[in-house]
Amino acid sequence: MILVTGGAGYIGSHVNKLLNDSGYETIVLDNLSKGHKSAVKWGELVNADLSDTETVREIFQNNDIEAVMHFAAFSSVAESVEEPEKYFKNNYENTLNLLKVMKEFRVRKFIFSSTASLYGIPKSIPISEENELKPINPYGESKLMVENLLKDESDFGGLKYVSLRYFNAAGADLDCEIGENHNPETHLIPLVLDAAIGKRGSISIFGDDYSTPDGTCIRDYIHVNDLADAHLKALQYLEEPFNDSNIFNLGNGTGFSVKEVIDTCKKVTGVDFEVIIDERRPGDPDILIADSKKAEEILKWKPQIPELEDIVESAWNWHKKINS
Ligand code: UDP
Image (cartoon, rainbow, N blue to C red; front, side):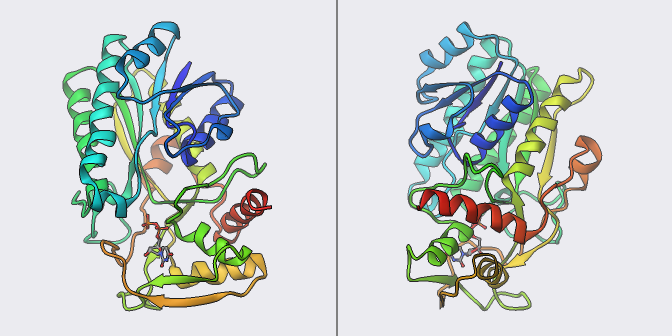
């Protein structure tokens, strides 16, 4: 049995589906503060908060948990700047609680949902795992604190973990059973699709004076199914007794500017809409592109849906479904 915390959320729900499709049994722990009950179509759902240690203990007591995949976290950079304590409590302290209970029950395998935000403003592109870790917001800082804790627990406490540093997760389940559905939405692709579907009048570009060819920020968009596949491979990696704890970047290795993303969305949807040049959003690095060679070499992972058009198309199919 695999415990999937945050399995009602965007990335967690796609991983939960893949685990079940691959023959694993899962139990999802989610407080449904951001996630959706309807996204947990596989495995059992326990509606509880990770700070509720008794309930977490009961899960370990009543199930034979082999490994934990930990997605439960807040992930809005803007919110983390306004309410840092909320991020340190939920993202760091609750992970500490979870690890304590795991230790009590001698569960050693842990897969952590980490982020490219750890790199802050990178010194070189593409970004490998060796790049300096210098988050520039409390969200990234809270995730870095967990990675530091995991390293110590692995070096001295018997934990075996894989930390997966995602670049920009995008797209949706190809069967359209689950997808991205944040409230409020802050991510570029769903917001652009909101403009395409007529839910908003226009899309704003946050700054066009960055050091990039068209002046807008460049990001590495990776399909959520490819992220899910990396989690499955990370679990299989940890199931091999001689493999050590490890850290992997997950991205396509190709960057697209905000303008290119908007143009792709216009092409895929066939809808034209107004685009407004707005102020920069604080804390946005010019360019984030992953070097994921390590995951390719060690996990034998390779993105299966690397084309931006295909990623956007899957997101669009889901977007039409939830807005119909
Ligand atoms: N962005 C934008 N307009 C929006 C939302 C996002 O121009 O309405 C830009 C944002 O500044 C960043 C990129 O799109 O450069 C991706 O932002 P997103 O929030 O999707 O992901 P992040 O890179 O922050 O994880």
